[in-house]
Image (tube, rainbow, N blue to C red):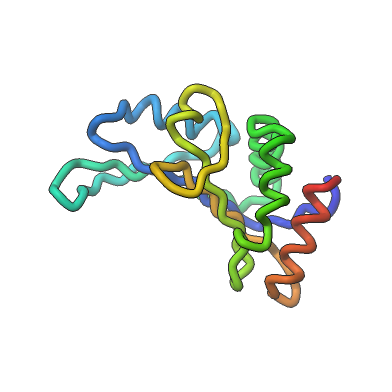
Length: 146
């Protein structure tokens, strides 16, 4: 893998009372390495409705590379092209790349980027020195094009 730019990833989503938490967990697990642990946290919505937060953080290099390989295979070249198109808008000044996958479609095995709704959140920390957005955009663009 050409100059792997990421140093950590956080993948997370919410499971609402109307959803099957095990199905949501399985969908999330399909994007993760086998040994990644999904942490569940019980919380509640504005109106007191139960919500379960599902989250995984990966920061070990080998596990992160395994995650990327699996993630890239799942989302396919078309989604990678869309990530490239919106790269500057999705990287913040702290060198984090934010992606959102449509959760309902992911549960059906289709991986589509979204800008709203009820997504699976992906936050990738980009390792750059110096930590500047322009450099992070360039590193990720170079990586995704190869």
